[in-house]
Image 1 (cartoon, chains in turn red, yellow):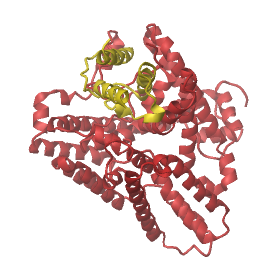
Image 2 (tube, each protein chain N blue to C red; image 1 turned 90 degrees about the vertical axis):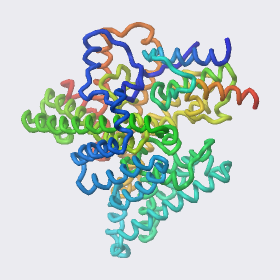
Image 3 (tube, chains in turn purple, blue; image 1 turned 135 degrees about the horizontal axis):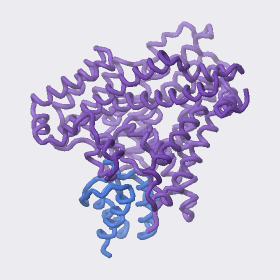
Image 4 (cartoon, chains in turn red, orange; image 1 turned 120 degrees about the horizontal axis):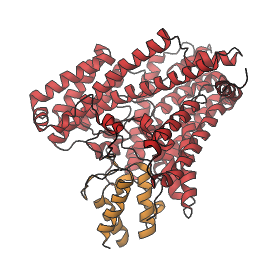
Length: 503
Length: 82
């Protein structure tokens, strides 16, 4: 049987995955557990399923939350988690109420400065009450979502129910055009309010509407509960949408006990990584005096670069800090999700052990990759070039890693359109377009080569491959710039300077 | 080879390619549990397209349709009777 290349990764704890059996000292080292596998002990499971056990777990979890949150936020989170733990039969209702409560307590989770920036510069809109407008726009968005989900349940064949992402893109583009080209200040300000709110919830809406075509879709109320759920998300829904939550919900008290023990372990690991990140930053930037990436890059742009060796250290430190940051954030969110009773996979899972570029991309930001796979890869793969398997894999990967990636970031950073105007914002995006294309090309090549590589044992236990993958992503971050400040030539100048070429 | 046995062999091959030789039941989740990834799902879909003529552009693709041996067998049987 001929198979397409598949990156070897299991973004879960060892208990679920069989994993590779390693016999070398590297294998022994990788089997070492700083945090013991609490969920494999039957006594722990029995205790965690009792009322006292749940209370102890919640207390310990709360302690872990306080390290990364304010007392107020930790208390709100803990109250929601306690409700989810003690009312497992009403978990989805608790999720909806909890997420709305969290939104009310922390309403400014997305970039709300844009409408104020636009409106503040015009006399006719400068006096608008943005706090009230914010509330109204959120209610309107949730109302629109409820109506759309309800319609999709009843009339799934309608175009905007069958193709929610296309509809959302059309709607969003129309709003951006209106905001960019209207002469009416009030209309422009109102359009920007709609753009910001719709942009924040666009991918949540896409998941919710898509779910309505499945065999057992959630009700609108349950779907709304997944919109920026209380455990936290960016514009990327963590962990995916309601369809995924239904599949990973703990069904028995034993399941729940395992999931909550894993949640506690993951939060503890996030806290440890958080401290490591803090220590790393102090040593790297304090003791060793390594500049931050932005500083080194600006110096290079001003034709006064730091020495090449220092730029390498800057790049390595920035790469390490990026991995620390996404791990701590993702682990914390997934830990809360697990504590609520959902067996979600980790968002970041041992990225440094990746032996292929595709593998690293899968391990680094799992749910972002899943979003691109769900909305760009699969639709392309199953529609186009169906007679040429390698070509369809390459085209679908490009659609996800390049096109989807670009669209996601352009929408996420829409403030540049307000600040620079549509034309300059689009032109200034060329650096990130280049980044996406190189990333997609790397993933395609890595996928096509994987099947060949798998046939023989990895050279030197795969260490050279791991080094190559990390070097690729480390260097690629020179172009991972979704700002609009520097031209691509400046980025190339920095890259060449690392290799001693140019000033 | 019987349908279920063929499906199990295909799934076992995929897991084995990833170094995962742990046993699995027919009802066990493969993709949602993280044992297989989205690109493994593509391999399964290609197998179903090639061996059973299932057209995912017509039936729509959803990872949960192929999340276990039971689900894959169920999908094949549904499509045979469609």
